[in-house]
Image (cartoon, rainbow, N blue to C red; front, side, top):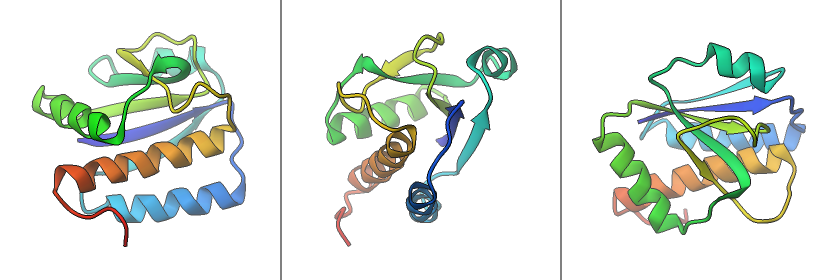
Amino acid sequence: MNFIIYLVNCKIDRFYREAIREYEKRLSRYCKTQVIAAKNAGVLASKLPGKLYKIIISTQGQLMSSEELAEKINRLGLAGNSTAAVIIGAEDMAGDESWAISPLEMDPGLQATVIFEQIYRAYRILHHEPYHK
């Protein structure tokens, strides 16, 4: 399964970009990832392919453990979803499901970093590998 992280109307600080690059490198053995900036949710919604599985990051979304996320990623792949769009900064946008990182509001760069870290952790769990280096 591959992941495209869309950042809607968000500016990411350098230290978050560096952390994301590190997780992209680590994730490259499990999946392909991409980060795309979008100016607004309306334009993004009109350009997303219909077959793309859309996950909206929202404080109102589903909270889950790392193990539950790993199982969810596994099920999405088994269901034939080759690519998931994880959308940050567009809580009101329609999606296939909504995930919460935390009920607390947080910086979009931090949200993106946590998403990458949790996807990496999920793949380590799915492959029965220790998470910590």
